[in-house]
View 1 (cartoon, rainbow, N blue to C red):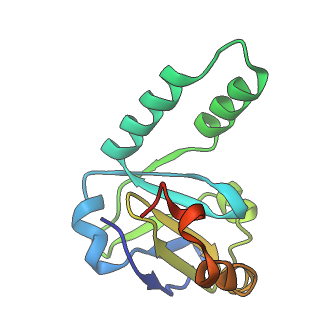
View 2: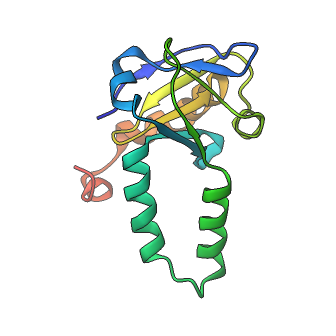
Length: 144
């Protein structure tokens, strides 16, 4: 399970050091892909394969939005293997999409990690933190 908030920096070669506590879970390979809100998602390879299989089987191939989503997800996914220092290299396209330059935030999102530009994450928190605090039981009935 991936939990917590970390603040690694992107180096000049586009490499990001993953939080040490997650390296064992990601040592067998990981998948980096574009995610919502202009962030990146990092999945353990096995978790990603399971998720993709489920999405693909549920997708209605006659639905143009489903086809577009699956195409974009597949095209935007990059397999990585962390180096000895726990670094992964983020592609130019991934860095552009998530506006990653130097200051980053890596957050745990239970089954995967998210990589955010530090300012974008702060802006997101500023916008949504009150919603978190004020969430009603009705809104959360499927979550908790």
